[in-house]
Image (cartoon, rainbow, N blue to C red; front, side, top):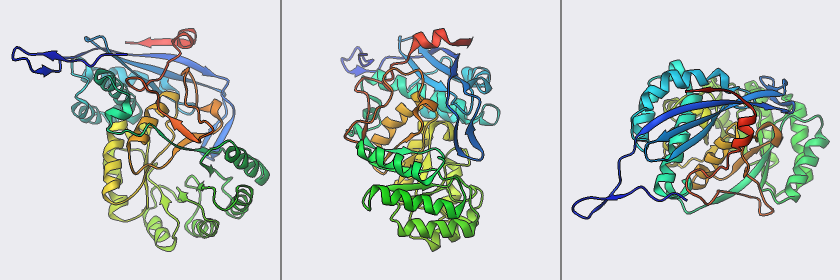
Length: 387
């Protein structure tokens, strides 16, 4: 447990002491035995190998913040050099609690470094801030809610029976909802949705994520079908750049449309969706939006429009734990996504998120993000250390 960093001035008033960043480093380590996984034609894992980067931001007060860079899809070695080259100079010598200033300065370099690196640094800064305050991150974000309903999010499976069986299994284990990533053939996708609905009954929440795969007419046909089936939301049915068709689709359907996972970008990328009334809910995650700082702003923006802000999977274990704190702290977030299979998304955290019989994902009750990082594994699998 870290004590809150406070001091007393000559006048007796309690004040925060100064704290400065004195080191930024990335340790690259191997991630192997990743199962073959597919969610869309453009999102599949076939190599079985990737690598992550342990981002460590240290301070002269003895506090450290940690984040993971990378995922099974995007090895950290693609981005780690840019983090050290372009973002480390911005961070060194600065107060890590000045997240707004630091995030704004990092965003100025997103064209040369990318949002994944900004997201990782931002996560580590939030970790430091919560440790300095002596509270779990969800409390620093202003919430007393420490758990949230979880839903299982499928990969593409081989048959209707496989989807139906998986959904029924998770329902029997207490999970609160199930989301289908279908094979992306509209007629067959509808039959899968029908089979899953029969398997879980009328009252169990279901969602469909078509991963940008339909044209307008197909999206409308599938949307009307899952509307009849009582699905909770309809996610990314159209190409993320086709705002015109999203507007038409939203006007035709009653089921809520959930878009804005892509394109990647910071808060400005949401403006056109709101101005054009092209989606019912907003969406985001740490690597695609440049960190929790962007997500907090966007969630409050969504709240102003009476919209949900549903959190996308974060790509690695530490992102997901940080996002769990965030999801618990945001009143217009209703579920926490757990992407399947677990082996393709969980690695190098000892106390990784587990969903119990209550169907809830629970935040760690220690200061910071609360991830017990497997430093022994990282040392064993180390590829390189960038400083």
